[in-house]
Every structure is written in C-alpha cells, then in structure tokens.
Image 1: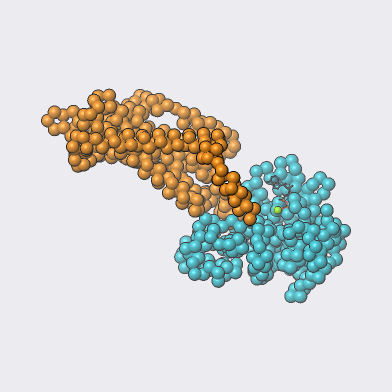
Image 2: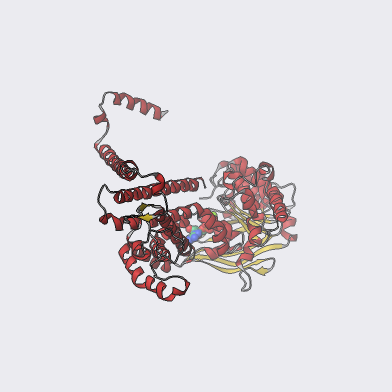
Length: 285
Length: 311
Ligand SMILES: Nc1ncnc2c1ncn2[C@@H]1O[C@H](COP(=O)(O)OP(=O)(O)O)[C@@H](O)[C@H]1O
Ligand SMILES: [Mg+2]
C-alpha cells in the first residue's frame, strides 16, 4: 500500500486502543532495548544518523517512515545482522536488558538467539514444517525427541499455525504452505529459539489482507510474552497493532533519523512534529 | 482473449501457405542443425550397436562367453573374451576416483562460495580453469613419473609391487575430475538463495552450522549431479588412466594391483586387431557397453535435475 493512500488518511485520526492505557506504558514499562547515538554507515554513506531510542518490554513498537530512511538498517543493529553486511559499520551503543550487545565478551550468535528476526519475504527452509521449527533448538543443542516435539507443537501453536498443519507437519515441506502460512512458520521458527525480542521487517508486505490480518492477530497474542518491533509501510497496520510508534525520515544528506517516538495514538492523532503530522496524514512527499 | 483472436487469425493466414513458406529461414536453419545432430547421434548409436552385437550374431558367441571374467584374447589354447574385468575396472576406477575427489571438490567449492575472501576467489577461479585445460597426457605423464614411482618405492610394503595400479588410476582421475565437480558444486551453492543463509544466521547459528545444515542439504541434489558428471568424465577418460593403471585384464581385487578399463583396453587393442575377427568385435561390444553406461548417467543426471527443480 502506498503511503499516500486515502484510507490511511481517513483512518488515522480514529485510532484508539481501548484495551491498553498507552500513556502508562511509556512511563512504567521496563526498557528492553535501548539505542544511543546509533549511526549506520554503508561504506562512506551514512544511512542512519544519531538515533536514540527506548523500546519498552512486552509491547509492540512500530517503525514507520519513507522507504530508504534506514528502518531495516536500524532493525538489523538490534540483532547484529549488520555484522554480515559487507561494508556496513555501526556506531553507538545498543543495550539489551541493560547489557551492551556489541560488548567485547558478547557472542553475536547469542544476541541473535535472544533477538529473533522475521524477514520481509517468508523464507522457510526447504525442509518439513517440523524441521523448520526444530532447526534452532537442534543447533543449540536440544536433541531429545520429546523435548523437540513439545517445542515444535507449542511454537506452531503460538504462531497460530498449529490448527492448519497439525495433520501433516512432520511430512509436509515448509515450502508447500501458502505465503501467509510460510510467514507464520517463520515466526514459529523464530519463537523456537526462545527470544526475548522479535523483530519483524515488513512481515506482511508480501501477503494478502487475510493473511495480514492473521499475522496482526498473532502479534497481539505474542505481545504478552515478547517485545516486538515491527517495521511497516502500512500506517493503518502501525495504528492497529502497535503500542508505540517511531517515525523516521531522511535528511538533506539522505541519511535517516528519528523524528519522534511516542504512544501510537498520539503519533497518529496529535504528533509533536510537523513532519510526522504530514506523513501520517498522507501529505508527505 | 486477445491470444485466441491472434491464433485464429494466424491459423487463417497459415492455411494458404506451403510448409516451406510457413517456416522462415532462421527457423529452417535451426531445424536443420537440430535434425543433423539427432541424425548423427542416431547413426552413431546404430553403428556402434550393429558392430557391438557382431560377436554374438556373426561369430556366434554366447552371452556368457562375453560377460564372464576371463580375458585371454591372444591365447591359442584357451582363448577367452570375457569383458567383465573391464566393466568392473571402469566402475571401480571411477567410483574410487569419485570417493577421493568428492570431499576435496565439495570442500573447495564450499570454501570458495561461503568462506573465501574475494581475492582468494579471484585467484581460485582462474586456477580452476587452467586445471580443466591441462591435457590428459600431461596428467598421465605426471602419473608415470611421479605417482607410480612413489607408490612402488614408498608404499611397496603395503602391496604396491609395480606402482601401476587401480589406486594410481583413481588418483590421476580424481585430479582430472576435481575441477568438474568443484565448479558445478560452486554454481549450485552460489545459486542457493541468500535468504536461507540469513534465516539460519538470524536464529543464532554459526556459519559452519549454516553451511552444514542449510547450504549442503539445499544443494544436495545439485552436488549429486556434479559428482555424477565427474564420474561420467572419469568413465570416458582413456589416455591418462591407461598410462598408470597397468592394463591387466583381470578382475580388480586390490587397489594396489594393476587392472584395466573399457576405454584403455579399447585404445590399446584396436590397433592389434583386424576387422571381422572376434577380438575386434568384442572391442565394439565394449564400446557399446560404455555408451550404454553413459546413457545411464544421463538418465541419472536428469532424474537428479528433476529432484532439484522440485526442491
Ligand atoms: N547492504 C547495503 N549496502 C549499501 N547500502 C545499503 C545497504 N542496505 C541499505 N542501504 C542503504 O541504506 C539506506 C537505508 O536503507 P534501509 O535501511 O533498507 O531503509 P528502509 O528499510 O527504511 O527502506 C538506503 O539508502 C539504502 O540504499
Ligand atoms: Mg526496509
């Protein structure tokens, strides 16, 4: 969906979250992830500039902003996936539960295990549904059959896929599922490593509206147990699912920066910044 | 809709034209070339098959007289044309060569695709191409001057009395098929989507775990294809093998002993025989067996290809 789509404009002011008292979240919830002075460079180009951001625990935070403003780059800092991007360099500190994830004695594999990442395009392994979910636990040393069975079943359940695959998940390939099911399988696979945080990079951009709705419902369920960060192009989605919203944009030098972060209802109804207001009301660009 | 209209109109137009007019020159040339290749292959097949069965039809040998283990073509008292030693020799030398070459090639390909820095890759790739271009006589020569003496002198104790042996043939062949298996495996591995690797790494696994549990399984059918193509090349190679294998027409029993293969026996004997005599005819039969073996390989490769396509 384009950022200038009229429905986004029409819906934005009506956002309310009756089930949550958003303002209480911002003050009382402990901080799960904290970025300070975050800069990301690709070669000589600065893609992300001086981001300071707190992500509260057991809440859903959405990242919105125009394409290319560095949302994916920032997300990849949280689980050290930028380590693997040739030419990428990260400056600043990121604390997970108060611990610097770039610290000298921290293993990147340990960070990635505690901070899961769901990709834009579903990418299940070419193996059975069972083996997809069991992949992480197996690599991390769980070989007991009963334990794996238990993990696979509960993660498929938490990812709202169990009912659809319970008859043949041991035989059926993950690739034979529909796009939406594949994405939920990828979520189940991520949950199986028992992360604290689940990062989702436009998880619904390749999905149809019904599959998207399923993922959104699922996220609401996961919220109780995990800290979730979702990048989305779809502002209605951000408004629907998230407790907090961070809006990024690009400066003159085309490096992305954080414009403002706040409770979702405030960002969409009563933003502090003019840039945010223009963007959420569809006047951007 | 638009399509069906177009095809109806084309059908209308076509009706007035002769076959000649309907096919434009470019297509005619393509068809001609394709036809010529098919005709050539068919003629070759018929020719070899015709000559290959002469030993049975013209000279009246029984099936058992040919498919047995005793090769004694120039004896006056106990002449025998059993070709099983060569079939077993070809399979044996090829399989051992593949067993030696596979871990090296697959390891090298994985290293080049997954681990090596760019400069190492830019050295390794041209090196591979040079490797492929080395003529087989050079391999054979290296085998005779370096490998065979080494086996004879330094491994004499474990049974290499002559140095010329099944093992020597397999070593030389393994070096020759190494670039084949390596380059195909490299292509297979680099064509595995990067998202699969990212997915694995994002689950907190190491690079080695990702290679072992995602990359290799995803490439398995392709790697099998590479190995089969390497074996095909090994089965067809004559000269280098012939120079180091000892060429003794006996069933292979020990890696340290001389033996022979279909190709090396055909090239060695064909000049000593006269058309029409059984010894000459049985060489044709051996050629036919080799051809059927390579058809078998082609079928295998196609099967594996289908498996790859299915994922
Ligand atoms: N691997 C990379 N190499 C070089 N430049 C990159 C890479 N990934 C992203 N960029 C650049 O960084 C900027 C931010 O990209 P990205 O984080 O993907 O933004 P977003 O997710 O908000 O669309 C873009 O200008 C993009 O071209
Ligand atoms: Mg992005």
